[in-house]
Amino acid sequence: MREHGVDEDTIIRELKGACARNVPYERVLSSMCTTPHPIAIKAHKEFIVSNLGDPRLFPGTASLEHACIGMLGELLHLPSAVGYITTGGTESNIQALRTARQLKHVDPGKANIVLPESAHYSFDKAAQMLGVSLRRTPLDDEMKADMDAMAGLVDKNTIALVAVAGTTEFGQVDPIPAISKLALDENIFLHVDAAFGGFVIPFMKDPSKYRFDFELPGVMSIAIDPHKMGMSTIPSGGLLYRDERHMKSLEISAQYLTSQVQSSLAGTRTGASAAATYAVMRHLGMDGYRRVVSECMDNTMFLRDSLVDMDIELALEPIMNIVTAKLPDAQSTRKKLCDMGWFVSTTSRPEALRMVVMPHVTRDVIEAFMADLKKIS
Ligand code: 0PR
Image (cartoon, rainbow, N blue to C red):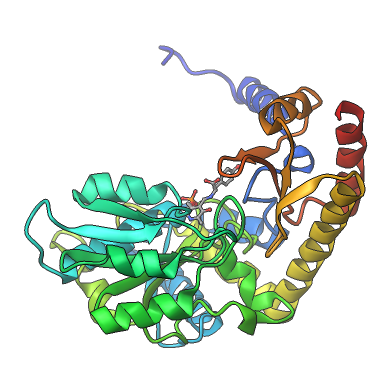
């Protein structure tokens, strides 16, 4: 740091310069985040100083967080669900596994978690932190967890099962009704990672095709991210529990706080996310999100059809707003697209070019993208 501070105009110029170097979302087909809804940005700014780590100092903000959990609980078929607004899917997944670890006492070093091969890498972080091992279940030919293999990996030291509703790479949904039954039969805690799919599936034309939430009796906790398809600001995640006692197992005594106990992972944590999430969920409502998802799905099918017209094979028919295209050398196509200012990602097994059709990926964006893709193929 400099000895003497710099004047405001200079700093604003520096900030604008840094901002201008960021990639505009209109060129990004690799991200699960998007430009937040304007009302979320407004609310975020309004609550920028509040700290939910000490909720009794910010009861107004705490009431917004409570209202968010109420709305998310309704969305996930359990209005009485409890939980809190996290920083995103990673924190929610870590906390859910920490809960499972608190609830079942297994000899140190022996605890394991059974989850699909496709589960997000945040579970690897959780496993390292908690000192538990991960048993990854192979996938079937549609990239869903193979049920028989999953059941075969469970033993007396299994503290949790994980299922994914909207996998990161392919947007696939695991057979969660069957996994819920396995969890009940074996009396194992089941966490569902719906960080992405949680704000997609309930708004699809036929949501009953992909049952994943608390209506399934074995599901004990769910991660659902407002900062992905919920159109809220970063960092906004949601962690919900069926049973208040489960969340209470995370409580740490914090006498010097006004609230006495804390169950969140972070101590000091922003209230801006709760305000932003409250604002956008209240403003859009169910029919607003249905419009968002319907537009994303129309654009997804437009991108899918444009690729098929070029004789490109898909790795999987789109389930949600993720398109995966099998190309002979997806990595080099990704690099060439990057040189043209387009950001896409690739999947590993099978190797494919991956495009996430977020709300900023409009029909115009797709047409411009396809024109450039044609030039390099
Ligand atoms: N669970 C699932 C199913 C996810 O897809 C992700 C993130 C997480 C959990 C973790 O969420 P947080 O990153 O909010 O903690 N999936 C994306 C990914 O890893 C996140 C992302 C978003 C990556 C925007 C890049 C990007 O530009 O690919």
